[in-house]
Length: 107
Image (cartoon, rainbow, N blue to C red; front, side):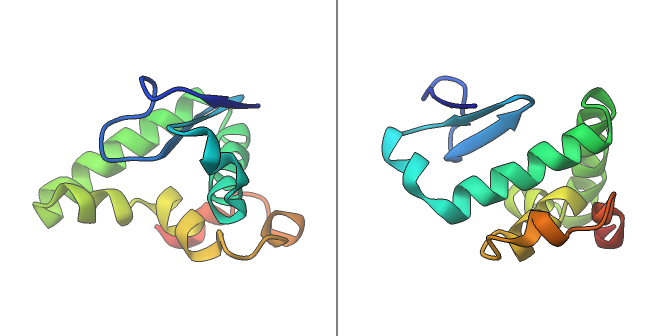
């Protein structure tokens, strides 16, 4: 379910996925198929990890990457979940062929 809320999306980002919702900063973003596919990849990851463990792993990995990289944006982009989503968001049929727990290949 896509919801528009500039207050739920952190500053500097255009969307965030918190199962079962995809929050977008602006209504026009709902037409962006690549962005929506990126967020659907996150939905799949969250479902596979039963939601709460996804966020725990996401935050821990982000903190580890932040210590390693010493750069917020680089740490964010190198999180395994984000790497899978960024590398495959333009492949609109990706989720049809994606193996279960495929994010593990991006650690």
